[in-house]
Amino acid sequence: MAQRGRPRSFDRTTALRRAMEVFWRKGYDNASMADLTAAMGINPPSLYAAFGSKEGLFREAVALYAETEGSGIWEGVPAAPTARAAMEHLLRATALAYTKGPEPLGCLIVLGAPQAECASPAIRDDLRRRRADNVRILEERLRRAVAEGELPAHVDCTAVANFYATVQHGMSIRARDGATREELLSVADCAMAAWDRLTSTASRNRDPSEKSK
Image (tube, rainbow, N blue to C red):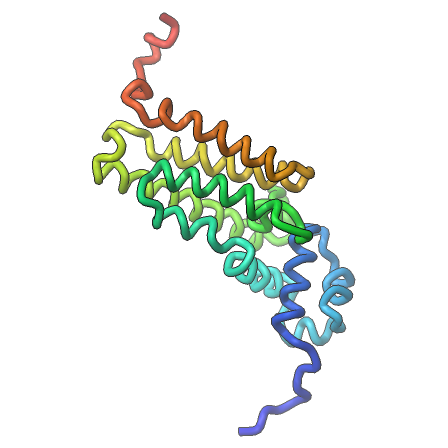
């Protein structure tokens, strides 16, 4: 059957990439339709016809970000030979990715809609879910390390995963503020200096009454 209507007069992939860059710089709320259509080189009817809505466009932009700019960071976590290597990979790959060129700095998934009262609760919740999924990836790698005997059984995998995810999110904000690659790599080194303390037998939870002794 022949396609009805006029064919698109723009490259959808290129337009989506440009929209992603706008969202990356401005976040979901601050990216206006005028900003988006100007960057994409299309008019509003074409945007709605191709992507359905601003929300639909953002979801596709985030997916493109994860497949391109965000690739290589999280895939290396389960593939790392040890849990320590996995956390080091996460932080060092983050430092390199967030300072690699003229693209907007920081992470779209962290910075795209951080406000509690986002204009789109669905977008806010989707990004929150993606961030939670990343924490889960770290926790699963740590639990695997416990099961394989690399880490002692008492290690609080949830706490350690939350710590390294929080450091990684903070690196995104520092990158947006203009931190250099060397500065972010030093953050990674500092966070890894805590590894032995976080995962050793000395880190076993003590009785609260002992903490004052």
